[in-house]
Amino acid sequence: MSLLWALLPDEFMPLAIAGIGLAVILGFLRLRKAAALIGGICLLLISGPFFDSLFDALPTWIFLLMLPILAIVIIRWLVRLVIGERAADHLVGSLAADLIRGIIVFPFRVLGLLFRRQ
Image (cartoon, rainbow, N blue to C red; front, side, top):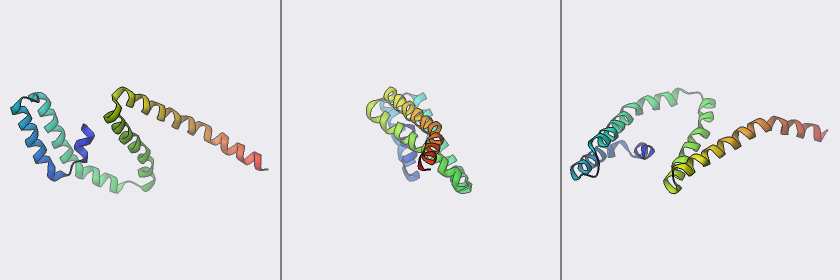
């Protein structure tokens, strides 16, 4: 749910806050959960310009290193939405293990290709 708030446009946030207030009035949400949601929305709105300037100042190579992490976060969120949190944790762990295994094995494959061609 936390990533879902980040996907909403800034113009929708007052309506989301009003919806949270309505949910508290109707008894669908507890006051503590509503305060946490509204605090998260406010923090998201306040931190947005800082993240924009930070990403604009980053060199391209660091930004490219961050893309796989962002892809894993989005895949985890989608899988958690569809099949559940524990399956998403297992999937992310498996993907991370495959990535590490590929990083470790890659130099040996390159060396094998170099020696095989000669």
